[in-house]
Amino acid sequence: MDENIETILHREHLSLASIPKRSLAFFIDETLLSFLLIIALWDSFSAAQNVNEMINITNSFLLEYMFLKIVYQAFFTMQYGATIGKLLVKIRVIELKTLSNPNVLVSLNRAIFRIISEMFFYLGFLWGILQPSKQTLHDKTARTLVINA
Image 1: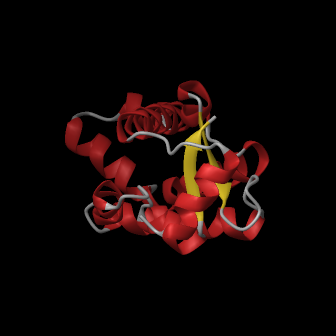
Image 2 (image 1 turned 135 degrees about the horizontal axis):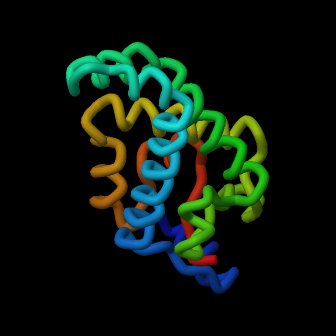
């Protein structure tokens, strides 16, 4: 782990969030956003004749769904330091420079690179699992850490 990060964590009595906690938060957030998509498209889904039509409907709203995910991640990270999933599992995101909630630009950076990681087979997430600091690609680019709350 980067000595600077280790020093900060020790000095501030902070501990990194575990991968299982982060994974559970991810699952909660993805489930919540999926339900929001289903509710928003309920009329279209109920009119669909088969699963292929439902998939086509979902695919036609892919950009809007990605935008929703970016807004959700950025807003909650900036406002509360955590998404709903992170709040439920008691972890939060901090900016390395300030050790507080990320500002709007850092939150947007993190949210956008999170989507990019998802688009490339979640490789940015895998990278985080392999790092001692548990920083995913979106954490590295935004210079953030996910800690226990």
